[in-house]
Length: 86
Image (cartoon, rainbow, N blue to C red; front, side, top):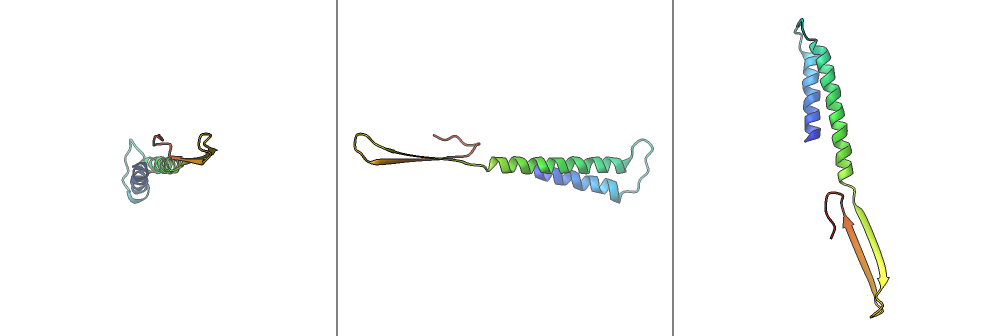
């Protein structure tokens, strides 16, 4: 959702900065457009960073020998930061 919001902010900012030729005394629409485009770029970058962080997984392997039977026991765990490993 944050990437989509960033793209919307960039599009609205570009429309205000480049497509409109309306002169208002109390606000500079071109400056508002540039501010919205910068905010949209920040939101897109933040969204990509959080998306990449969420996809990271943690894998743990442990091999041991059961003292009672003498067989080799292997335990594998894989978990992501969002999920709970049991």
